[in-house]
Amino acid sequence: MTLDAMAAAVDGCQRCKLGSGRTHIVFGVGNADADLVFVGEAPGKNEDEQGIPFVGRAGQMLTRMIENVIEIPRSDVYICNILKCRPPGNRNPEPDEIACCEPYLYKQLEIIQPRLIVALGKFAAQWLLQTQTPIGKLRGKFGRYRGIPTLATYHPAYLLRNPSQKRTVMDDLLRIKAVQSGELEPEIEIFS
Image (cartoon, rainbow, N blue to C red; front, side):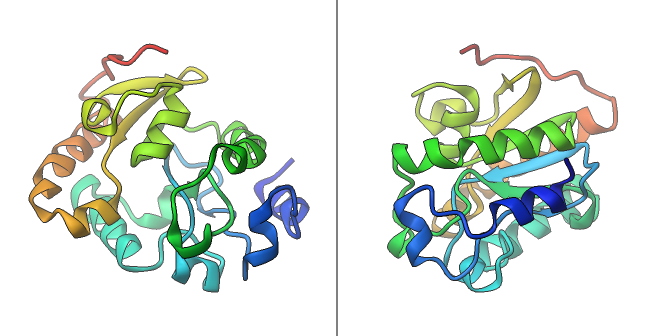
C-alpha cells in the first residue's frame, strides 16, 4: 500500500468522536521515502482548515528547525501526528482517540520505513516510546519505536510559549543531523 492509497482509505474516518467535528483529516505530508519522520500530537486550527500538518506558527517554527538546523528541505522529511483530527479547542489527545488513530500511524511508519523518528512533545514521545516518563526527562534521549531510533524533544508550540528552551531543542536537532550524516550513532537511553 502507498501513503496516497492509505490517505484515501482513511478519508471519511469516523472511528472516534473527533471525526464529526473536523474540517479535514490531517493525514501527513512530505517524502514517502523519507529517512527522517517528525511525529507531533494532533492537528490545530490551521491544520484542520488546510488538511496539512504543521502549517500554523508551530509549523513555521518546525520548518525553520528542519531547514536551518538539520539543513535539509522540509520536503525531504515526512511530518504527521498521532491524531489525524483536531481535538476541540486544541485540548490534549485522549487515550481512546490515540487508540483509534494508532493503526494509521503504525501503517504510515511501516510504509515509509524511516531511519529516524523525532517525537515532538509529550504525547508523541510517550506513545512512541511506550512510557509514562515526563517529556522533560525524555527530551534529548533516544529510544526505539518498533526498532527505529526515536528521539524525544519538545513540541514547537511549547517553544513558542517557552523561547528559552529553543537552544535545548537545537542541541537535540544537531544530534539528529549528526546521526543523519553518519557522524554519530544513536545511543539508546530509553527502554520500554
